[in-house]
Length: 309
Image (cartoon, rainbow, N blue to C red; front, side, top):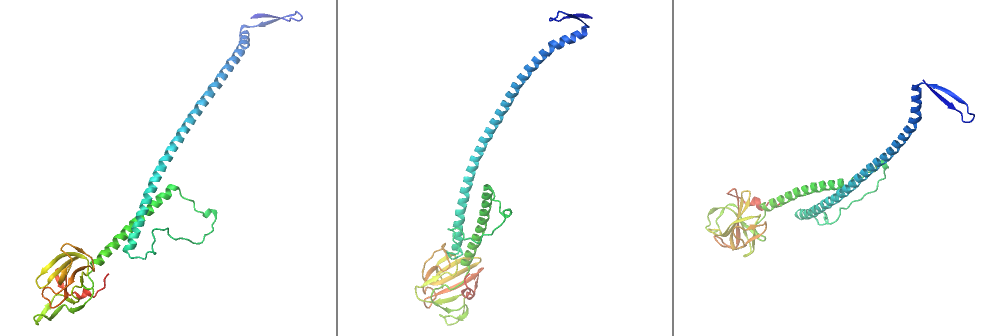
């Protein structure tokens, strides 16, 4: 137990306080500790605020740096996309030019009127404008989506035109190789295929072809396209031309005055191959015309009178 005397300075009176050691220790601790604690807490809070601000600034700097990197990357991507788009557009333009050329070629092959398909101008379109609500309005597709769809359409049209070109060319080749018509431009049929009286001996004989008489020196033409496999003198035929047309067909043209082709020449339908004459076993200017199918002679009449394809 401790005695503490408190003196009032105004009146000089004194007062005795009795306090045990535990209570005194707590009191002294409170008197001394509270200011110290307050000072410590104030220091800690001040330092903590400064540290918090530094951390925030550091995080903001990191975020800004990351955004700068994203902007640079976006610019690089945009530049790369522009280069890719420009390259893709150039390729599409080149393919469009090719399609125009292919279309013009097909128009020529099919012998269409020039005004029917004009590939040098835009297609004619039109129609009344139809009103619609906003909900019915079409949402425009993205730029790259438009390019992709255009590339698909061009590829599809290109493939179709190529198939059509092949069909038309095959049809033209087949038509040219189709044996039809007469081997002369002017003249008349002077002797038919089959049994007849031989014009030289006067006896019955077999005639393997058809004779067309005409003016000396007039053109003899091929009845189909093909390759010349013989051009020269042959017994009884005089100056003769033989043409292979493919598919097992060959034709012969005899008694020429002069030959205009040689072996190996590729001839077109209606092309002059010689001048009408009377060489070989003949009584006057004419052309002896024969048709062979798979090596066997056939009546040319069926081919002479059928229409060209």
